[in-house]
Figure: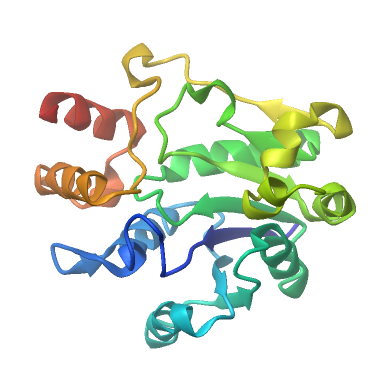
Length: 229
């Protein structure tokens, strides 16, 4: 089975334009995401999926300069972009990672992929119920299942939000939702980068790390977060 990890991002975020390439300690947010994903057992197929619009040229240039595979698709219909990316690279499963998820934990990625492959689930996620902090979301979907289901994405919100349809229609496939049962205090925390305040706080968390950022798992990062609040 060929598994691809797809980082879905764009440059012109409405609340924080250019955030994906905003620098923290000399390195763009995208680099942090990719470095954390490179620790995964399935890191051989990491792709950045951005739009085909000129506004996203800076992301493409960054990928070219750092030999990062990329895919370009529709700006608004993000679900179709994701589907076409999986098809283009012949992925049997795609892992959807948001471009604002700077603290994605490769252990959670590997856990989700292992569940999907071992039981052949159509969709695996740690998002339902928000038991993990936002910004640490991991979703794995079968490419075959996704291509079949995307024709049913008949609302704009399903086209914009890649996997939202599955949470509203769990009966459509074999789905598995895993939850955080280890760290009660992590539930409901916000670690996604949506605004300048989010960015500033994330930067402060990284400044408190005395080892490489990717060596900190989601629980260690949560502890830093709670101590910084």
